[in-house]
Amino acid sequence: MVLTGAGISKDSGIPTFRGKDGWYKNTPPEKLATNEAFYSNPDLVWEWYNMRRKIILNASPNAAHYKIAEMEKKFPCFLLVTQNVDSLHKKAGSRKIVELHGNIFRTKCTECQRVFNEDYRIFKEDELPPRCSYCGGILRPDVVWYGESLNPEDLDKALSFAYRADLIIVIGTSGIVYPAAMLPHIVKSNGGIVVEINPENTPITEIADLKIKEGAKNALSQLKF
Ligand code: NAD
Ligand code: ZN
Image (cartoon, rainbow, N blue to C red):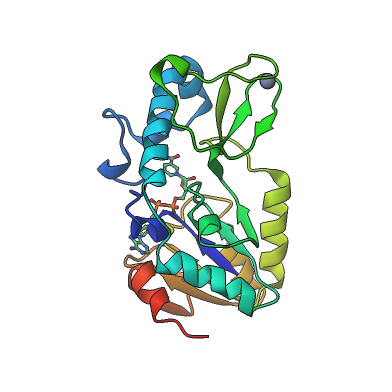
């Protein structure tokens, strides 16, 4: 099992959230990625998502994404759980994947709750906020914001896999956002092995059986199986 976070896509040029890199118009993500922020100013939140969509559309998967896509071909029992919303794992070929925090290219109607599949548009200023083609309701990005619950089916798939996993490789996540950060703890408490790839220490380092203190791209390009 593999769990990834923003660090794996940093090697593709997509900024992580923590620190100034993740700020927009002097606002930290914690003040933008919420339901309240969206209802008080949907255009501002959409401008920020437009900007992030642009960065992501200009980025390509790196060797780490490709190596993980190879793993699912090699190991019949495999699951990738990502907290990233950037689609880079899918672009690299991963199919056994749970996008725990949603996908930045999907939208969801705030009125009728319909979900619209991945669409790679950048919205023009006069199209903001985009509207639902069925009911005219305001569309929001189909991602999980602060204070929101995860899709129960996705969470269930990730948790039940973790209970059975012999090994989890945790890559590029700060390990402080729950429930994603529970996964390595579940694997460990059921006798599995925890490997962490991250240039920094995190709360997961304490339970890691093996810590590879390197960037994702560099570490995974050297992995042989
Ligand atoms: P994060 O930004 O919290 O942490 C990134 C981690 O990657 C850090 O531990 C860092 O040391 C590591 N890293 C940096 N460069 C690396 C590299 N080259 N290779 C490997 N690791 C590297 O990201 P996260 O852990 O994915 O955050 C978890 C969740 O928090 C996100 O999925 C998101 O849902 C949520 N969050 C969202 C927002 C937002 O919506 N904008 C903001 C903050 C957090
Ligand atoms: Zn609708």
